[in-house]
Length: 143
Length: 75
Image 1 (tube, rainbow over the protein chains, first blue to last red):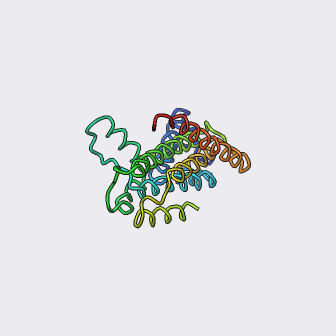
Image 2: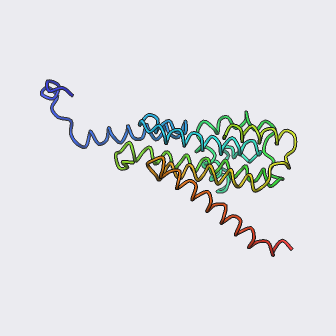
Image 3: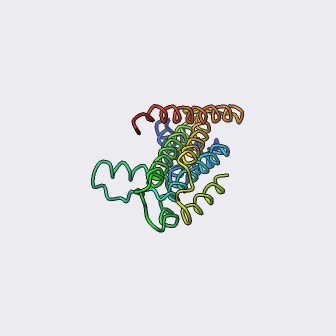
């Protein structure tokens, strides 16, 4: 804000600035959720952005190729709900599940079951990256 | 590397599902999770590499140890 603008409008109250900062941090977190690594990319953390995109993508796509179970937004019971939350946490990779898993899940084989764990782990890793991006944007994390 | 693993898994799925071993699947999982944790917790490339390698080896060691502990129950 320029000196003239400050003189006319007055200084921005601290609580208003903090609220704006929190909203911005939330935007970074949402970006990190939709496309893994995007939140870090926007925060100019190139290394982390690349690591999270590669790891979340690698886990999710391997899980789909192993024909793991992708939980739909059915929310029938707690297990379904948790599975959906974990899977949906992969962001854009949840939307491309059908492309990679054309034949549908096959958990009759151990590898299909492993695939389910790969997809859930991808979601958990992305959730960690979302929280990390949020914390960095708020300035609570300096690394 | 991830792309080649994915392509490998894709061809395996299409032709012979039994060709990918449980150990390979577990190693791939351990590798990707170790790299993600290293990226999350460490700052420099050197620290990340050290942590990822250490975490990956610990994943493998614990998995093999648990596998052997469960061995008597399979007979």
